[in-house]
Length: 206
Length: 226
Image (cartoon, rainbow over all chains, first blue to last red; front, side, top):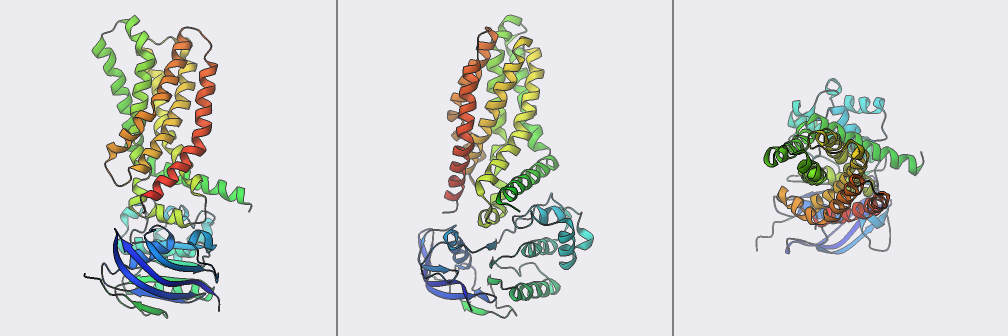
């Protein structure tokens, strides 16, 4: 099975301070990796270093089975990133938040309606997000995963603010996308029920 | 779908999204317009109703007011998208970031610059600007305010996450050439001289500014991530 991403000896720093040392893992196509740790353990820093938003790191990244270490931009991997801030605009409707997203601009009205149905927001398609609950806004963010086929989804704490149905929805969608060959690199405070390789991080207190 | 169609769709999507958000948040376009009208109105109140005095100062008054007004909303070009994670998602997507920046600049101009141009036509009446120079006023402001939106986007990108006034302080010194060109066009028009040379220079500034300043803005935004 091909590797979407292989990370070797990643050392990340935040504001000059080392947050993690010597992290190595591999994300295979159609598989998931979960990075689990408490606040400040460097979960977000790993994701943002992989994406190139943080350059204060060393180590090697091999994208798409390449034998040469490269950045994401050089690696030719289609990625979807969802950080702590999920980019849902309160003044836009559910439909607009899906359509106007980086993954949704080529989607038809029917495709968006079908995704809204899947994420349980069929009856809220034309409602402004300011009038939705935090959990419902999270569901819109999850709906964006389905708008386009990506190789790798980097999702920072996706289970935040979700009820049991919301968590099940994520599990179903991850399984569906895994079956299409997509991989997930997810962070969280505690392990999820997802079928994944789990990596535990410690907080550096020194 | 060809890459060109896809890029155009991407441009239209960002433009539509930003226009929708701007019109749902009316302060975005009303504040610069009201500010412009208030500043322009203050001059006749302060200087008195002398037609010759106001007429000789009209071009400068309109231009300075337009420059200051167009800078009022620049901070908002990227700040919300930066705070709520939208910029992260746009930057990670495979769509060209340059196109995203230009669409956002064009939206800023449409909601802030274009209404100011219309208001300047109205204000030219009570500043006794000769009606024969209206075309020069409109064309100079059209080029000048679009260039200011480009400069404003760069200032906004450099000051992301910091004080809103910082972007105006960064941008204002760089707006001097635009101000000089704009007022030179107006002086030439009032004195019935040929001003096409100045318009060409402003057009050239804009032609270089669109790619140059948009690329610099992309780099300035990336600086905030490091």
